[in-house]
Amino acid sequence: MRILALDGSLGGDHGNSSVLLDAATEILRSEATVERATLARAPGFVAHRAALAAADAIVVATGTYWDSWSSLLQQFLEQATPSEGTELWLGKPAAVLVTAHSVGGKGVLSRLQGVLSTFGAQIPPMGGLVITRVGELARGDGGPDCEDIWGLSDLEVVCHNLVACARGSRAFRAWAVDRGDPGRRWLER
Image 1 (cartoon, rainbow, N blue to C red):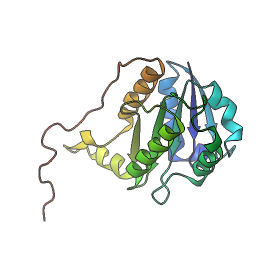
Image 2 (spheres, one colour):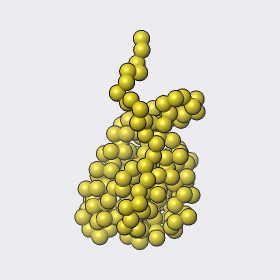
Image 3 (cartoon, rainbow, N blue to C red):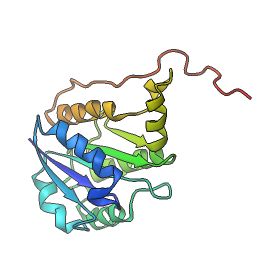
């Protein structure tokens, strides 16, 4: 199996998204050959078309910039538009990894998954996550409600489900979820 790991962040090889994508690549290499590409080094769609064509699945990583993905990733998607609905995308499993300083990442994740789905890619269950600086600080404190904050350990689930989907399997996993009382009042004044 071949997987394309595409870093679409502005920080390129030196940013937070690169650290997250490196962690995913480490996990995926036990199951597949992973080709790593960075838009900050080689911008545009044409530079990565052959790698995408050869891939059985794709992982896209981006930072959050003013409630959106990077301008480099936007350019890539715009240039890829003529390939929408072609064999380049149809049914190809895609995972999305987003980093954010504090807020906005979940919107980026959902919107980017929607765009990839419209291109024709298949989004596996629990096929994306957002790692934030705020979340990492909260998880570092080990508070009682940290199970509902995405962390690097959840990356195992995203990678497993991407590989399962690429193999045509339904042996998906789930990450930890707060199954207690998510509707409880937690804000006090």
